[in-house]
Length: 130
Image 1 (cartoon, rainbow, N blue to C red):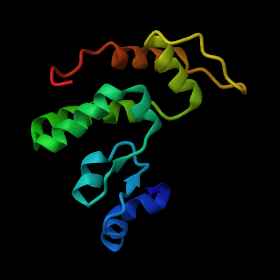
Image 2: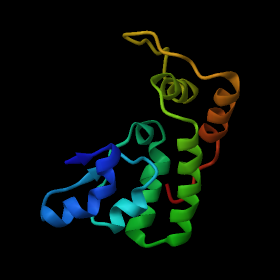
Image 3: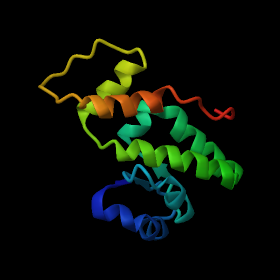
Image 4: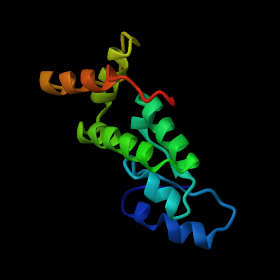
C-alpha cells in the first residue's frame, strides 16, 4: 500500500497495524525515516528521473552506511527543492538524453535558472557505490 499526503506521516502506524503488508510512502525526501519507522520504501516520480541517487541511498540504508545516507540525502534535498511538475521531470529526462518528449497535454517548461540547476544535478558525478 502507498500512503501519500498527510497519511504518509503514519507509515509506522500502518506498518505496525498490518504485519506482512508492505507500506510505501509518497514522501520523496524521507526514505531513511520511512525505513526506520517500518515502511518498505517510497514510490516517487523523482526517483524515476534520478534513479541512481535514490537507489544509492537505499543501498546505503541497507548497508547501515550513515555517511553515505547523509550524502545521498543532501542530493535528494536538492532534487526536491526543484519542485514537482511534469515539465520539470521531462526536462531532467531531456538533459539525460531521452527525447524528444511529447505530452498528451501542454506542460510548462522550467525557467532557465531551474533548467541550469537541473543540469548541475544531472551532470554531478555519482557516488562510486552506485
